[in-house]
Length: 255
Ligand code: HEC
Image 1 (cartoon, helix red, strand yellow):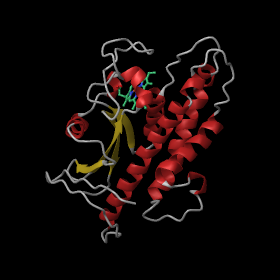
Image 2 (spheres, rainbow, N blue to C red):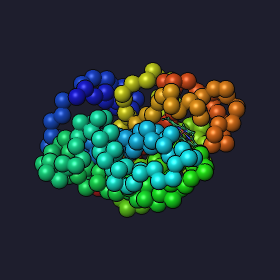
Image 3 (cartoon, rainbow, N blue to C red):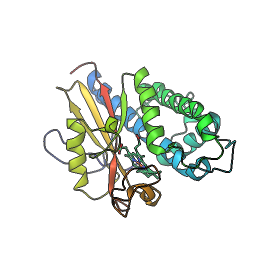
Image 4 (cartoon, helix red, strand yellow):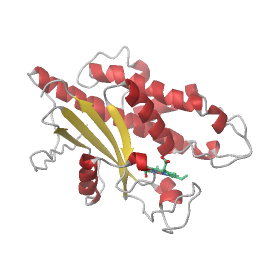
């Protein structure tokens, strides 16, 4: 798979196809493992957001009571969407040998994120199945925040959704995230993610950009300033604009 590798640390930007060879030192292995795991986790959160987006009309149907969007159905769709995005089949994760493609850390954390997602959907069942109300505020962003929060409480790896001007103050970027978002917003859309060591090499930060697609624009699009269905003023964005990012913060044991 072609990857775009961006090294910001030295103020140097490198694009190209990266051939992965397992690095010799233990710490380098740990860094490589944390990076691949972070990338996969960000993709998994992104896939979960897509599943919510695909079910949005169903979730917001005021006529229908039981929507059938159980935690198990959500899991099936999540596994399918993730496979479409990454080629990795989570249902076969246990029998997939640990390797650089699926590092041991990913084998542990991907199922933990699936579980967190299922719990969010389980806890939202009454809301989702409520008849008589349309918009329920169960949207990609609210699912994403809740799943990220649950997951991050149980793991040393932290997941977050953020944006330079977030609707929800909880999604405010930290200094590092803000600098990467500013950098990304000046660039054309790409498959890129940004990965960097911070904190004197003690923390790995991965930022995976999100871009607006048509389905987002009912709420985040034009006309700017008009209230959307969720009650927030629309931002006037267009398809392809940077929507924010999913960020991963992973502590490393050795600098
Ligand atoms: C139904 C309206 C609606 C749709 C459709 C929608 N959003 Fe949002 N979005 C919101 C709301 C409301 C929030 C704040 C959620 C909260 O309270 O945390 C939000 C938050 C976000 C955030 C987190 C940062 C922030 O502003 O708090 C991102 C990133 C985001 N949306 C991107 C998208 C993308 C990308 C799409 C399309 C795939 C999309 N949204 C579709 C309403 C919407």
